[in-house]
Amino acid sequence: MAAAAALWRRMVFSAMGAVKSHNSIIRTMSDVRTVTLIPGDGIGPEISNAVMKIFDTAEVPIRWEERSVTAIQAPSGNWVIPPEAKESMNKHKIGLKGPLKTPIAAGHPSMNLLLRKTFDLYANVRPCVSIEGFKTPYDDVDLVTIRENTEGEYSGIEHVIVDGVVQSIKLITENASRRIAEFAFEYSRNNNRKRVTAVHKANIMRMSDGLFLRKCREVAENCHDVKFNEMYLDTVCLNMVQDPSQFDVLVMPNLYGDILSDLCAGLIGGLGVTPSGNIGENGIALFESVHGTAPDIAGLDLANPTALLLSAVMMLRHIDLHDYAKKIETACFETIKEGKVLTKDLGGNSKCSEFTHEICQRVRDLD
Image (tube, rainbow, N blue to C red; front, side, top):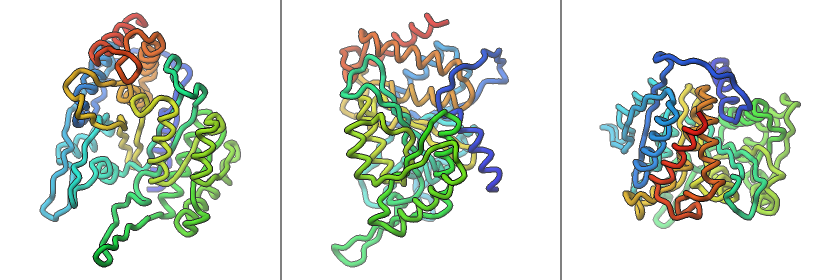
């Protein structure tokens, strides 16, 4: 089992990052991949439709299988995703997901957390790269956050000790820590990244973060072609806003990754332009936009589909459709760089449909 898992990880690492050049190939109907599409809530259906339209224009050999992941409660009392969605993901092994809302109610799970646990999506990968033409205080950001996705403070283990006192358990295991460290180093090696930084607070949480850090050090000892250093979480946050160019690949436990990956997204303009992918041990990969559902603008044709589109580009590279990925990514970045047709959050006044149409036109021009 361990050997098979290691082989799968080697297969997916290089696909997660940008690849410089690939030969064009002729595809037949048998090459069409089926992708599970989870449109999500709020603006999710609108931005999903935008992505599908751009993919159609680029003639990407993808067939979409749309599914809902609204949580249902099993007879056992456990929350699960609908069987149709689970079957689709297990069958096709690849998915694209829009934003999901989680009702704030006692006992109701986070939908994103439920998906990660259901499919053992242990590694969250977020490239954060400055976009030319989109002005932010930084113009030289080029880093990747790799977040352990299945345990830590998000294990969901909480209970009341006595009235007024609640305890939440931070779960860190040797296997999960080693697995995410191996992923980070293999990703770095296969994507020409030079350094991995382990982010931790082992000075305070000596047992839990200490275990995570030890596994990172052990993996680093066998990866001499990739530099390794370790930093406290608070120091990373301070240094990140001072000079993000000093960082390359950062690997960290769950909660730290949730916070730091959003901070890094802010450096390049926000979650609306940040792609994200989740890799599972069993061969499943789910790519997603990580921004909110924005219910205040849902249905008004005002949403920005960039994050979901760039996540879909990550997905295309993951399944070796590199030429299509490059064409769509180039069309998106050129649209943003020109600055004439942009949604409001990108600094313009265009509608989602107009922004989508402009990208589609540029896709055609690249043919």
